[in-house]
Image (cartoon, rainbow, N blue to C red; front, top):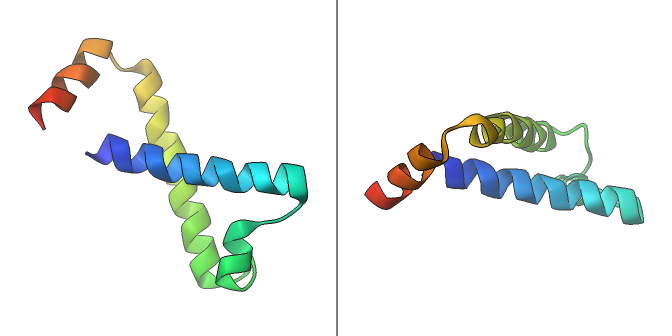
Length: 72
């Protein structure tokens, strides 16, 4: 379950980065009232931690990933 949550947060962060790159529009900062707000910094931190967690998906054994998905 943690893998799915981390992946979802990382995807949302990727969409935000895409909007910054394509349109120079930061969705998180817009929602939170600026990139310097505490809420925005928390969201950015969660996205970063989620991305780091998702690195483990690349290096884990495939059978371990599928086995834990079926067990849940």
